[in-house]
Length: 142
Image: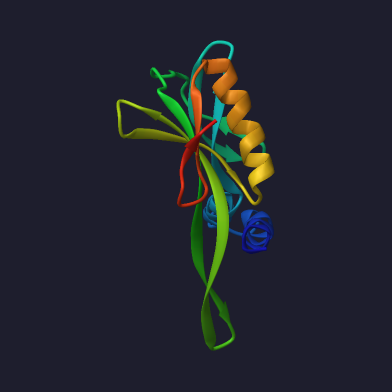
């Protein structure tokens, strides 16, 4: 909503003054998302910045992955409504690729365990590694 508003103000301001370009540039921040792409056939990955469906990022060789981990965690964000604010927490399931003992690449975030395990098993199969189920206190290898 903010991005659209800034873009519209910028588009109209271009004709009256050069400040419109500043509003358009600022609107791109609100249209930006971050992510990761993994190519399992070439064993490469890249961290991406996506702006209006255009992806930018440098492809890197995937390190020697030791295992794929699936675990639950919580994310929190502060929500402001009028003059009141509250902290909202959500449970998410993350899929990480571990290498060099404790280094990781966050590969996927899901709202449910079924989707997370489907992705984890697909990645593990392509990389020929095991999956660690860390969604409960008792971790187990799949």
